[in-house]
Length: 114
Image 1: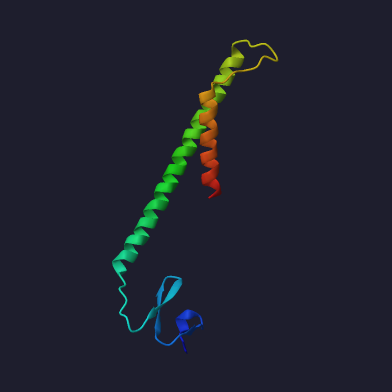
Image 2: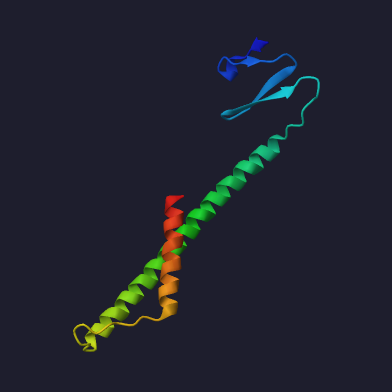
C-alpha cells in the first residue's frame, strides 16, 4: 500500500489510484482506464445551481401568496367587525379559505425548515 498526499494520509491499496473532485476522493482500478467526463461534472454543477435558484424563487412565491391570503383574511375579519357584530358572536370563515391558508402555511414552514 502506498500513501497519497491528496487523501489526507490515507493508504491507497495496490492496483488503485485516487480520483478527486472537490472534497470527494474515490479509488479507481489502475488496470481499467476509467471513463471520466469533465463536461458531465460541469452539467451536474450547473443543474444543481439552477435547481437551487428555482427553489428559492418558488419559496418566495409561496411566501408572497401566503402573506397575501393572510392579509386578505385579516381585512375580511376587520370588515366584518365594522359591520356591527355583537360582542361574543362567532365569526365564520369559509372552509376553503381555512384549508388554503393552512396548506400554504405548512408549505412555507416545510421550506423554511429544509
